[in-house]
Length: 331
Image (tube, rainbow, N blue to C red; front, side):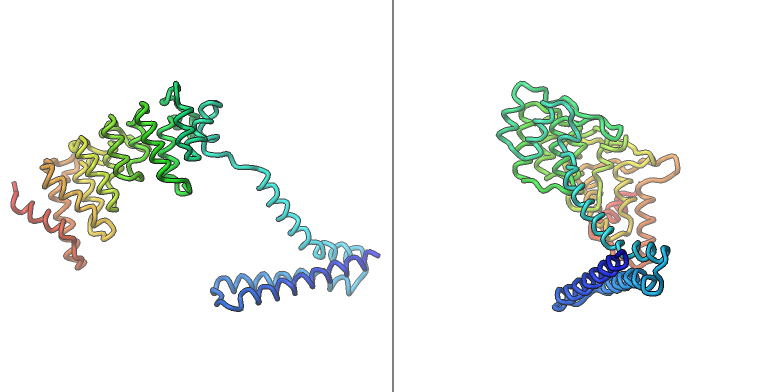
């Protein structure tokens, strides 16, 4: 009886393998398989055949208890794997991941406001925030201070998986600012990822351009200086709104030196030379500072010139302007 059951299960496994194989060939008939995809398919097919043989061969050769147990294990192995996957999918569906609002806020009232923000429901947010302290902080997360509602709205917007309505999110940000939300830490939270007009709104509403960065303890400007056009525009905005240019980071670099040092000869950073030129041409920044290592802006530029020439790298026009500027203003 046991032998018949095992042969039936082995037969079902064989039929299932044939059906899956035929289905695979039908589905892929009109496209070329990538080498990696084809390789993995071949390996899985060989493993499936091996499992069937490991169940069938011992059963065919012997009816001993060991053979029956050995064959039973491999005969029911595909079924066990299938049940495991089905159970895993069901458990994943049952175990609902907490929303961002639930993650960052525990208090019922706070969570209801945060949920409305997360859902992009501007009207509900406007109703719920009446009479509420908009600067109350939520849960302490990853050993960092909790977020207020404005920071939460901005963090949602900057998230890689944000699928909400950006227009609604912007309206909620404006609504929270209008109703008195503190803007300084919100600026640090979002200046590198928000539209320029939103960052300008935060600054015009009292955000301190000289606040510290969100993660690091250096001035925010150092975190804003980056390689993209958006980064450069944000850095220029921050400077125009009062960010200090005589501050130093942990490496004893001014923002001017930091931008030039990061840019180097990398084409990826060529846009940043626009920011360096802006500081010299429009902000008339003092570039004479020499740090304790004897490094200064002019030395950085000279080093980049030498490297660019040695590696035959064509530098952007903004860098050429900077070189000419330094030549004309040698001290």
